Image 1 (cartoon, rainbow, N blue to C red):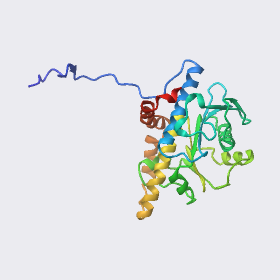
Image 2 (image 1 turned 135 degrees about the horizontal axis):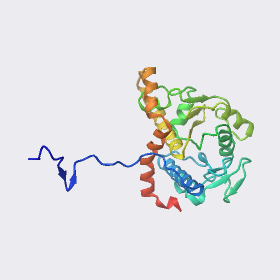
Image 3 (image 1 turned 120 degrees about the horizontal axis):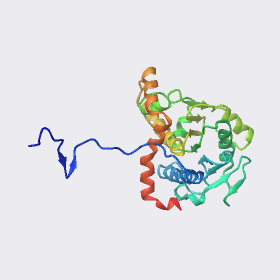
Image 4 (image 1 turned 90 degrees about the vertical axis):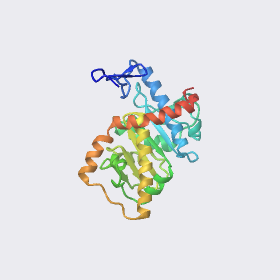
Length: 270
């Protein structure tokens, strides 16, 4: 019988409060370390997108602002499978759309839309877009996500519906600027007849917001196919977003995906 005064022990471990691991975004002592971290997370996020079935031909891209040259961003090469991207494959593109590091072409749509977002929103470190199946389907409805689940509350009053140029391939810089001008706030956007966009203060958050929004689109499509989903009260949805929709929540949500892809695809760091 355990001593009522002693805290006891299991396998030699005393049953007393222990210091816990810090679960927060890392801090960097130099710009080179921060750049490498963003590159690794970008390559990992792209592979995760591939694993989740977000790849479709040449469509889709994630960009990450360079920490030293903020008017430049890292992006995946045109026509390279998400599942194959390594750190060494990433391109650095300047604000004119020119590849300044790398020897592969860049997706013109990635430059036009993402460069405009990065220019108008200096707080955005990363932006993600892919032709994911449920996001594409939901975008054709021409409406925002409803707060039908706790996860959907992440985006409650924090995403935009952009109808301009919906479904048209955006190649002109003016069209990119127009798109970005309608996406000056919020963590995500639904571009009508096109798909989903997400942004974040880290690569991790931008990637997780995209994954979460894709699944929210899926859940709403399923619910509406079965009946008329009941909405979460506005005050409850707002309260829930304040606890699960913060930048650090997006960063934290990505960590399990990162651990899985790092374990299965360590070559992404090459």
